[in-house]
Image (cartoon, rainbow, N blue to C red; front, side, top):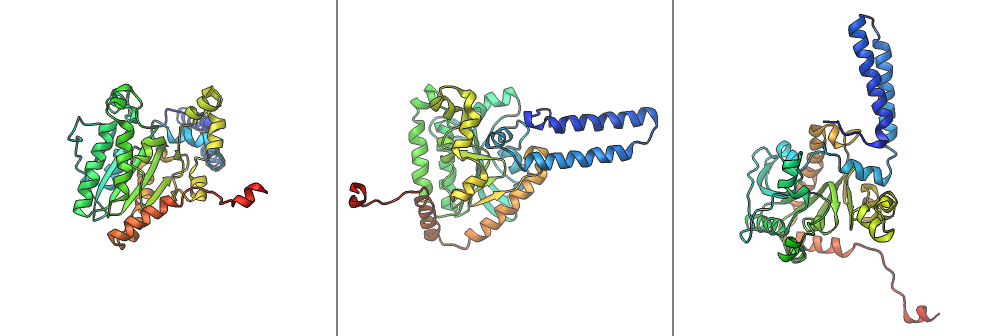
Length: 326
């Protein structure tokens, strides 16, 4: 699962190689080197703790994109064993970059919806590399309306670099599809929890992101644009992506500080891709607590709370005309 090694993980990779070499030497020579192996494992744990507690925003973006990271269906398989996927937007086709359907989560009926990437080239092509198209958002809206009619909570998992910007997507009105989702999600009278599990890029993310609670995994990001896109616009070169990531304030800790994220879900040391089961357990525990709290509220309270939450985003100052003149 860990074939992909990120640049900043090089010291850990070297220690793992040394541990493997000592283990092979011990087997082939019959010499006990368990104390040396234990010392290296301790050093590996210390190195990992030091590296992952001091990640830069760009390094967190890299982890959020790790190909072994759990995706929406991985979390659903661990949290909602009776999930039944529903397909199609009833207008054009089925977009496999968004999956969704009714499920049971810890004894509670929910509607779960999320963006989905692929594990290999064939699946990535099928799922458009996690870039949803208009029919995906319309499918999501269809499922949210079903959930509202059945009065069951909605949980969305977000992991996309953005909505697909291709010609076909524009011809089928991608901007309108996202805008309608935003409007309609504000009118839902059931609890809505949005969980950013990997990439939370641009309108592609916000199209599923209007919730009473916004939760974010420790190494996920949420931003108006990808770092590469920002670098291409501001510095005319994608090589400045790391600089853009610093400027965008897209990390979980910064989003919590700004009041955009309501809670940060911790991940196993090294990232969620290191232990899918543990990552799902941590996510499930936070999700259960949030659902317990929200399900006590009435439909009107949920609707009003969602509106007020988003109205409070951003910082601004009122300046009087006298102040401007002075």
